[in-house]
Length: 416
Image (cartoon, helix red, strand yellow):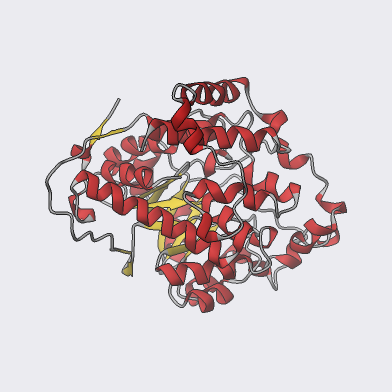
């Protein structure tokens, strides 16, 4: 990918952030980095002119990369909902690190390989899919489109990729399974009441989910940007958050039939023994989502985890300054191939997916990009985002001389 194209994406990022309600939350470091990228792009005036694109796309066919969907989505959604999607911890440093981590990894192409046939298909927990790509759990997707998670499920079905459903979904796991027509994953936010949590687990299991991904990376977090918006007084927000009188639980179908008046959501002092409890409670594969160190990866294995998701919640969990892709190697080193390791955070290009796979990831997750597509064009937008990333992955596999996922390895990488 030409440097100017990458800088153009950064310039777009700087432009939309400058006009967004999140500007006050950006650190000087991120602004300086984006400004520097813009300066570098201006070294070739002719190429810069060719790459400039200031319009907002009006149809999915106009999109050339996933970044094109962000301005279109931002133009259509409530400002508070946009902030919920775009926010990061503290000064957005980990969001920036997620992208920077990919850029530090260089590629080593192999020439004159027969790449007339490229196979991106794989099997994840017994499910055959078209590509090593999954759609990360994102809560309350009616914020972005009336069909929310159901539109995403239809897009996932059309493209045959895995969809992970959030605990705080606007549509039930049964609705999503019916729309997807195949198993998915269920992301779990535990509660202070085990029977309430167990009911969710059993619903997901009955709906055919193959994996349970317990999110462990947010014992606490700082959500400054979204706190600027009073959701309780915004009628647009209330359409998907529910009334303040019931805490919004009426809009969360996975809590149907549960008395949430005395139940708290969160880690609530839980420790590693909870993994043992989850393992005994379900036949689904149990994964931990939010693991970023070798020490925790080893503990996952000690407690029988069936998989690990290397993730920093898209830069929303904590301000570590480490990109998820930078955390991946040490987790993989601790696991040594004993369980699948997945990764998400900052993925925007097919080259990003390739780099993660070459390091050893089983599959790679996307979050904000498909939400941009959903908010901009609904199911069509989700499908186009997947199409673009799969096209780009195919291209880089051809460039690297790797005709199947099994042939992707670290020999294609130059690590800083």
